[in-house]
Image (cartoon, rainbow, N blue to C red; front, side, top):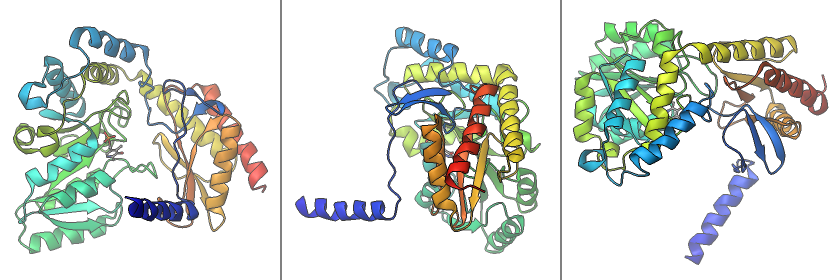
Length: 398
Ligand SMILES: *Cc1c(COP(=O)(O)O)cnc(C)c1O
């Protein structure tokens, strides 16, 4: 044991020396726009709490009531004795939101992506995956026996080439898989073009909409709604851990046969505990709120537009778009250091944002990723911009 402890310690030291150690900041409040850490109070601009449902009174009340009505735990996988009527209700509500025949819950979206590929695709099939897809897609693809191809991020010429080569290679099934919204850029996948190319080559399309379900698209149905291809995307995976209450759980939504087969074969579904009753009830309330009204989405859009406008006026370089993920760029050699120093200073000023640099994003493209929420007030957004301006002035005067 001592030998391995020494080995692991030197590995940890290498991570530290490279400046890549991730530390957890301990939060002493519920997740919200306004939080507190030991260092003091802060406005939170780095949660995936897009609709502000993580601490929404109706969601909290639904989860609390469920403890009395449905108990604390399931102590079973779904197919033995772990399915309450509300689990099915939630699956139907998700399918309705996303616009598919049915859906199936998983313990997380990581597990949904981990379980789906090996069930649907074998050695005679090909998966074509965007190069910037989420780690859980990469791992899920690895767990399948299908042949693998990658295309450069959102590069439709490259996707065409990969599709042509897969067809020429005699593939049985071809599946194109992409994140609906890419988390480091806030860019949407070009789903209309992807669906065109997939149709042309007889391929299926799967979208991981974890950073879109509930808030992207006019009625929050996802990136396929935003791109006008709701009826052309075959399979959607997503999470309950972001906009939809931020509790936990993931799903696959799609044709009934896909869902039915996953219930027979998907290993994270068969061999991992059912989502806890209070989480199901809170998530169900969150889905109903997201489906029932555009109000929170309008607030979120107003906040994102206000932030993008004020920051552009203040001379910051942003990646373009409308997503609630807004990358504030710190390009060049000094960028990584500047982004980190600006983010650190902003926390002292009471604004919690995170800097990302290589290897999480490409070299020379360091950024502070700001995530807006419907829980932010206009005043909160203005405070964030003011802190950016002040911190830049102190760290990297222009
Ligand atoms: C967050 C995220 C996941 C993981 O979701 P969990 O439910 O937290 O496991 C998967 N895919 C993408 C694209 C994500 O952003």
